[in-house]
Figure 1 (tube, rainbow, N blue to C red):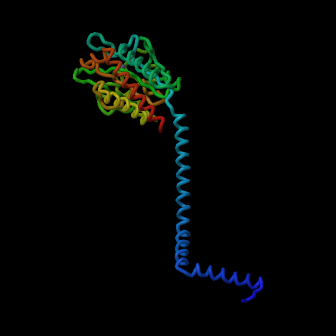
Figure 2 (figure 1 turned 135 degrees about the horizontal axis):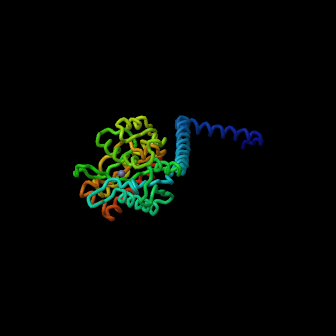
Figure 3 (figure 1 turned 120 degrees about the vertical axis):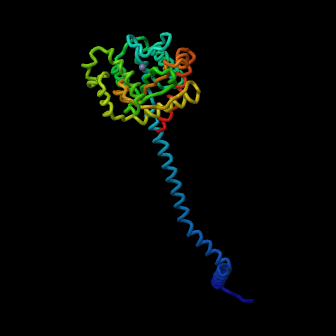
Length: 310
Ligand SMILES: [Zn+2]
């Protein structure tokens, strides 16, 4: 029997431990471990990078959502001015059976405003007139500007000596591209002739509907809201078309005095032709005007939703 000291025993244990460790690392396990370590250190930077990208994307996404939300809060359309064309001594165009444009326009304007107030929360409706009274064209734009309106819609009825023409069309401010578009703006601008001293009214900058050259003043017009006005008009058209209310024509451009000085997206609606019997019957019925006003409200609502997400 070998007698060893405690120290020698400790030394032997150390040697045995080392041999075990060497045994552990000297086998196939050593190679496997090295491979695993190599793989781990190779993919770690990649893992960190992906993680970092994900974190960045998350941050960006949250930032975008937040800023969009803030913009949406700022960009809600809060005020709309609805302008019933003509009024008082200015009847507008007159359809068969003494149907006056001023009356049709006023009723559609009030119906539209009511539908907006009932269906769209947070929108204040202002009318340029709620009764049968004459208002100068420049005053209508001034009402919208002084109320800081976000939208201006002027409501009218169309007329053409040829009774075949029919349907809903709308205009945004700009240079007319056809003689027909010019004719519509000329007819609507003629309301100015009923205004006292329009010649000396500086608001019109010398515009005279009797002068063929007068229209040139509109060619200098810079429309900062053209895109939004066009979008508003097409939203109304889409809604009316979708609900099959009345035949719709395209959105057009021409120089309208009533839109000229508005400082917000604006449009002029020609709801239908009083010179066409089908349109006349439709516009002269309470049901027809209700359908039209309701579809216009839905179109405005769609535009408002689109705008708030910009
Ligand atoms: Zn009119």
